[in-house]
Image 1: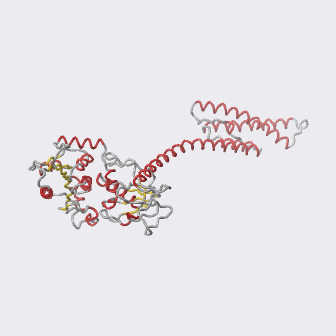
Image 2: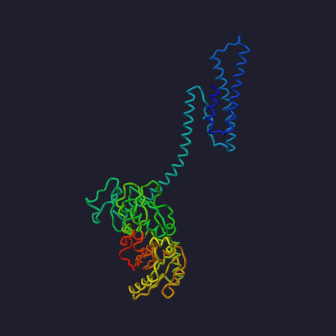
Image 3: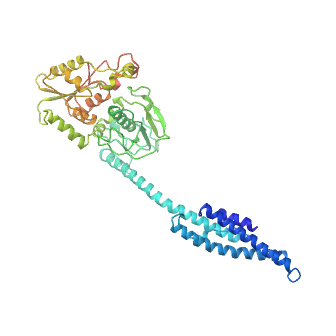
Length: 467
């Protein structure tokens, strides 16, 4: 029985003491017990007639010896443990008396178990407090962001006493034609409507590719979320966007287990997003139709406001090439993309670079459109050598020096009109400028795999000019 108690005692100490010390304690304890039993048996053998000890007395004597041994060991362990704590080999134990020893007394055992459990709960509670504080801080920050969205919505939309947005018959959203459930937000839509409302659900998307593709993903996500009364979720640092634009911060939410909803083609407005399933979703994959965000175009232009550092660099480059802010001439941006579009796999998929004849025709079109105005052309490209060769006969063309894609985009966006090349970068340069956009109509190559995913009326605004 004593040996069993020692083993139980050893098990209770495993979480507090090193393995070598436990082994030493166990061996020492067993040795003491065996030695005590040996002395007792020798005493009985030497004095059988003078001393009569019954079985019950025998048990009582052993229990007394064991209790005395426990008391001694306990004090020894207290001293050893304190030494180890000061040597930083053990976690701090604030109450060593909570280390309980196996005992035949049931009441004492239950009392020790309760004390041990309370201490464990206290430790867990203390650890939880720090975690809870951090979690509450994050939740408070997200609530503050959402409250800001609600306040912005109230400034430009009718809001009832409960903070909900009221439907407006004047704009085609009122009447009995629209059934709004209790869990949904009542939405009023008009031209100056703010983007985010009191949304019951979220929508996110993936962000592949370079600047032009990222801008399409961001703008389309905001537009689709707006049309479905969702709160858009955007990663805190979207590489290629946050470095150039002053984007609105959105709450941080884990999107890993959300359902994915796919667009069938890259250059179509997909009907699979209208309406979205009644759960949090991730929109996939390429969302390159302006119709996704046409209803909130003013909001998208505000989101794609260049930060001060990018805009300053763009202005400095324009001044250095002879374009001054107070100019009276018309500034036309020309973007020439070549680079990766010369790779054979991209050519095979249907990508093509615009030839010199296209740019010449576009510049003639501009001359015809503005016959009485002076026009200055600024060219941004990833192939400056090609541009220097092909625009060398034009005195009104200024080829921009090498710069980041964001700085070149800021220059293009500041132009009155844009002559596009191929790809999404040119598309956004023309859209942000707000003027006339001329695009190369043979992109993608007709009949190619890329061409099959494009609906030109969904990808290019109607007022843009194909050449």
